Structure formats: structure tokens, C-alpha cells
Length: 388
Image (cartoon, rainbow, N blue to C red; front, side, top):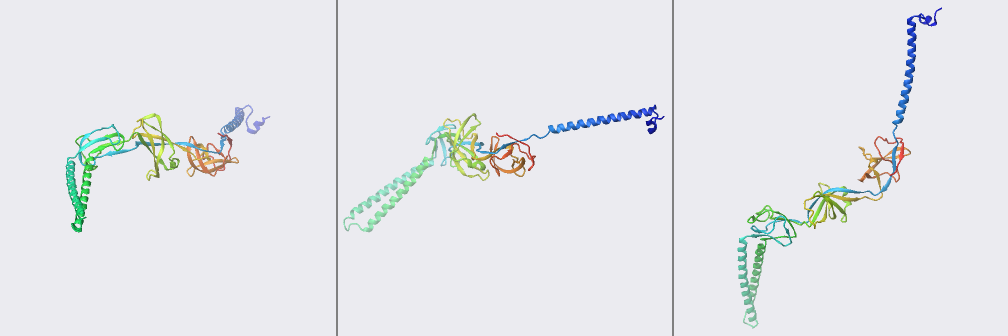
């Protein structure tokens, strides 16, 4: 009797082909079992990884109001409170210099003496004319006085002669006044041969030596004889951008540092505001008076000025990370019923990682602390609340 498999497949029960076929079936069944187990294991592993890579909940906070105080740093320059270039007022030669670079001078002190021989000659000639005219005037005055006294006797002096004498006296007096004015003019010109300090300060530049020919600017001397600077008091000059111009007034105080004294801080108070913006820089020139009695600071020093900016009270303040600077408009992400809601905002001042924002917001709104554009508007969110 034939084996059932032999009847079906045509193999003898003891033939090698039949045995090989049976082994193939057993091996195939084993492989299918292993593949099924492997697929199940891989599915479980992928499910575990998906559970592990699920996004963590977003941290949120409640919107609060307050006052943001910050500091604005601007470059500044120290300049002399007063500075003047001293030129010769008349064409002359330097006779003697009494000061040099670095000399401290007082107001009215003689700095240089010039000489101009022609001025002395002009003064002598004017003095001579003045004395001559004085003699003429005194003679005409005496003549008029005598005629006036004689005219008191009726019929001795005609009224016409008296009028002519009076006119001659007045004419000589007018000429005498003109000669006096001419003499004073030349005398004042001679005083110009002395260069005196208009205010107390320090000579910061000397451009001539004794014997040099000097004169008014462009008429004998291109450079000044001296440059005088007042250094006991300095001006700190800064240019405040338009966005911050409203934060400074006549009572504001600032602190500043200079590179030459890196470990020292100085104080100053706003003294003068330009009241208008520079057309090119769109900034306001602001000056502070600086007491420099100890002489530590020098005109021309570059400084770093710290200006305190007191913010407006009761404004919304958020962390900078809560603002998304998109290409269209900055926005924050508000959470309403576990859904994201984009709210466009205008930004104010910033400082210490905080930012003023203005927009359609309400106190105690729930906002995402670390907002990104990946949080789509209207998407459902898993959040965790954490207040500072």
C-alpha cells in the first residue's frame, strides 16, 4: 500500500526526494514563525520609541504688568567748557611770549606782546592834532566869551558878530571831539598789541615764536597764536537717538567712564538739550556739565555713557523668548482652551531679558514661554503652567 504523500506527490516514502521535500516544509514553517516573531518585536520597539519621542508639554505663564527699567549705553565725548583761538588783531610782529603749552592762565593775564612801529607814529601824529585843535577851540571860546560880555553894553557889538563867534566856537568844539575820537581809535589799536586771556584756563596750543609776523585770520597768520581751553569744567556731549530722546530732561543724571581711567565712574547731570533732531543722524545733541577741578579728565576723551531709562508703569512685560519675530509681524502665542492663538504685538523697550509688548492682550492671559512658528495658529497644545 502506498503512503498518502506518495500518492499525492508521487514520491516513494523512502526516497531521498521525499525526505528533502519534508525538510523544506519544516524549514519554511520555522522561518515563517521567526519572521512573525521578529515583526511583532520590531512593532513593539517602534511603538516604544514613538512613546519616548513624544513632544514634552509647552511651558506657559500668566501675563503680568509692571515697569521695565533699563540702561542705554551711548558713546560720548568730553570737550572744553570754553575754547578759543587767539589771533593778533592787527598786523604786527611777536615781541615776547609769556606763556607756552600747558601753562595755566588767569582771566586778563598778559599772554603775548607785539610791536608795530607805524602804530606808534600814528598815535603821536593824532596826539599832536588833538593838542592843536584844543588850542583852536579854547581861542574861539575865549573870543566868544569876550564878545558876549561886551555885548551887554548896548551898541558895542552887533548881534551878527556875536552869532559868528558862537558858530566858530561850536565848529571848533566839534572838530576837537572828532580828533579825540581819532586818538582813542589809534590808542585802542595800540592796546591790541597785547594778547590777554579772555577767561581762565590752560594753553593747549602755541603756533608761533618771538619775531613771527602775525595778523588777523587770513591776513598774516593762518594759525592762531594760542589755543586756550577751560578745563576746570568740561562738557560731556552725546547724541541721543530719536527713540530715546523723550527719556531725558533737564533733571536727568547719567554716569560715564573713560578709557584712560577704566576703574573709575563719574557722574554728570543733563544741562542742555538741543530741542531738535540732527537731520543726518536723527538724534538730539545733549550736553552735561562735568566738574573737573581735580584735573583727572582731559578734553577730547571718549567716554561710555550709561543713561537710565525709566519705563512706563503698568505695561505688559514678557520674556524675549515668548516673542516670535516673524517676517510679517512679531507675535506671541496665547493659549485659549488648550489651543494656540497668535496675537500680533508691537514691541517697546527691552532689558535684562525682558520686553515691553503692546497689543490685543489682557492681564493674566496664558502665553507660551518659548514660542516658535512651529506652533501653528489654532493647533491643540499640551501645556504646563509655571509662573516666575
